[in-house]
Image (cartoon, rainbow, N blue to C red; front, side):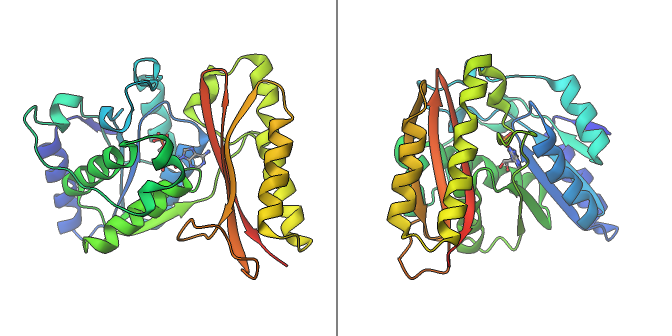
Length: 281
Ligand code: AMP
């Protein structure tokens, strides 16, 4: 796999491939790759002729009290995973190659970014949309791949691409889980053995939500039952558990046919998110 950290060189390589008729797909990541990331690269490999993954731990999407300093960096292993999953090119810029020190521009989505993750992590989505906008402008892909794991993030990016007429097809890929149900995340490696066991309540609460939805239980009641289950688990600090509309993230109406259960919780210092789309009876 070809590896390049220069925005201009990467732009030229992809432009060349597209000029030769290739459909180009990009998979943005922050590295510390796992099978969830690999599934995005594999999906891009199936759809596209030229597959680019990007590895950049974006400082502007971390809050002042968040974990950027301890965020895992495993570049050699990441490059092997990119190669195995079928990437043609890995873009590995450092911060000085991505951001001018005197930059005065950013990209901001309003509305959607003010709820849930955006409310708890002020400025987070501004960092995400700005870096994804920059990655789109550097890579100029036909398609871009994101995980449903970050449910709100893929909605925000879809909104940005529509509002700004980007003409890039956004593909959302299913959540890849460990065998016991925990959604794969680069942050899972921080969990103590005890917290790793406790974390299973998150997936259990989503399975409960699925059962209750299928049984015709009201959406507010589903959210309340999820919250109760999670709050009953020692050492798990619930942030939110909600049942909302799949595109607006406002609480799902009682006569809705579909929705999504979204949750966030802290175990020790580690904050985890997960979600499950629901079909109501
Ligand atoms: P990150 O490196 O955490 O910024 O994630 C990069 C991309 O991988 C994002 O689009 C995530 O939604 C996606 N992703 C992370 N974890 C998973 C997972 N368990 N299953 C599917 N996609 C994932």
